[in-house]
Image (cartoon, rainbow, N blue to C red; front, side):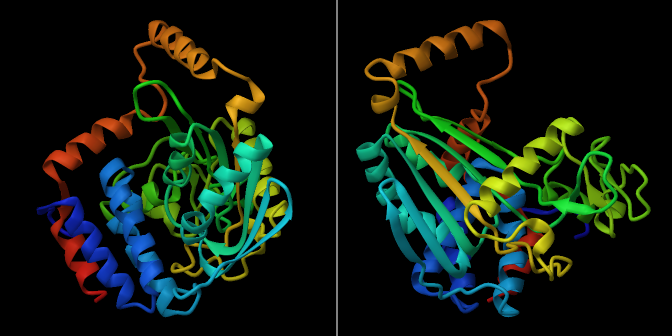
Amino acid sequence: MGKSRNVQLKLEEVQQLAEKVFLANACSDEMAKVLANVIMLCERDGPASHGLFSMYSYVGSLRKGISNGKAEPMAEYPKSGVIRVDGDNGYNQLVINKFTKDLICATKETGIATLAIRNSHHIGPLKHDIEPIAEAGLVAFSCVVSKALMTSYKGKKKIFGTDPIAFACPRTGKEPVVWDMSSSSMSFMEIEVASTKNEKIQPESAVDKNGNPTLDSVAAMDGGMLLPFAKHKGSAIAFMVELMAAGLTGGRFAFENSISEDPDFAGANRGQTIIAMDPKSLHGPGFIDRVDEFIDAYSKSTAERIPGDGRLSRRLKAKTSGIEVDHDLLETVKSFL
């Protein structure tokens, strides 16, 4: 993208631009609003790699007909506490936007409930999917499958997606504890951003197309493979995600995405599982007090922040001062109109 020149934007300007782009690329009003909000939230809270930078993936998928911008998800309720949704080849965030209230109501009625999504795509972090569930006083877990990008520990071919997991929990007097993380040592989008700047990546994050360990982000993107975090431990987490997010929902496993090498196929028809739990049913009164006790003990044990709380400082800064966007990236996004 050449020499960096940053442009200052307000959050509402980011959201308005993104919505215009989605409307110009075969999205319904509802889909455009939901996805534009996703872009804004990523620019606000991070990671920015999933904000405006990711719009080429959305637009490429929409223009090629890989994803359905006018999707109309259909839900089934086969059991109390189970919401099963066919996303009509759209985006998971639309499904989540439409059915989170149902999930919250079912959880408060039954104690634990699940939203299982298939035949739909997902580009972006999981934290924004489940933060509203924790804001409603519930505990949430989610996982999602991507296209095949990562090999297993000591593996020789791509078998896993980056296969992230996310957790959210309410606490007293502050935004919920919310974090998400990929099963890969680095996320695909982080490496992709690094490759546009020819930056090195972290050790043990990827191998090149010949299977050799590499710090070269470009080599990692050019036919290479991502590696799981913590060797066999990350591989085990990804194994679990494939079965929970794709196996349980009827979505595709990462290796089943036949056009996964298409650079516009970032959404990858991901299966996603969201599980919500009601502390009042499982614990009884006093759960939030227990959360506060643990957070206090944790904070006294380390200088490290509470997991996921980095987003809160970024959020405050973005709300107050807006965000900085690379000039060339902004022009690229505008060219999609």
